[in-house]
Length: 261
Image (tube, rainbow, N blue to C red; front, top):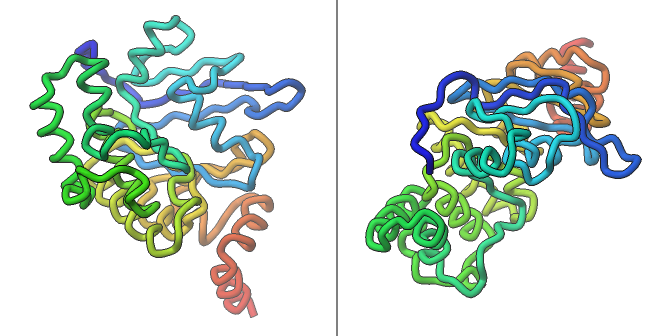
C-alpha cells in the first residue's frame, strides 16, 4: 500500500453513467459518502445497485462523469485503480474463497504474495480477524467443509486482512439460509460499530434500518431517494419507494394502513 494519508469524503460520484450495450445501467449518479458512514443501497432487481457498488473498486468502469474514492480519481489510470483497490475491501454474494486453500491461507494469500507482508505477521493478522468474526476455530478447514454463513464470515475476515478503509458488500446474505443470515448480519453490524465506512447492497431491511446512516433507493439506473432510515421506512417521499417497501416490508405497509383507518 502506498502510505498516503487520505482526507475528505470516502466516495464521490458526480453524474456517473454506465452502459452495457444499449442497456443504460447507471444514469447520472450523484452520491457522496462520508468517511465512517454506513450506506445501504436497495431497490428492485435490475435497478443498478450492483453496478454502482462495483464501480467503486473499478470492477465496472464508469463511462462518463467523475468517480473518486478516498480522493483518488479512477480515470487517472492503472496506478490509480490499484491505489483505490488497496483501500477497498469487497464481499460478494457467493463468497469467492479459493476452494483449494484453507481459511487461514485464503486470508494470508494477498498480504504475503501481493504486499510482501512477512508470513508470520500475515498469519497473526489473519487469526486476529478470524477471531473477530467468530471463525478462529475454523482456520484450518477448507471452504467446502464450511456452511454458507461460515464461508461468508471467512470472506469478510479475508477482506479485513487487507486493512481497507471502505468495505463493500454486494448482497452478502442472498445465498444463505435464514440461520446463517443472522450470523453474517451480526458480524456486519459489529463492523459498522467499529467505525468502518460501509456500502451495502441488500434486501435485509431490518439490518438497513438498524445499521445504516442513509438509505439509497435506486430504480432503473437512477437514485430515486436518499434518506435516513426512519424517514425512508416511515415516510418515503417517492411513490416508487412506497411500492418497493410494500413488497419487501409488508408488515410495515399493513401497520401504516391500519394507522390511517
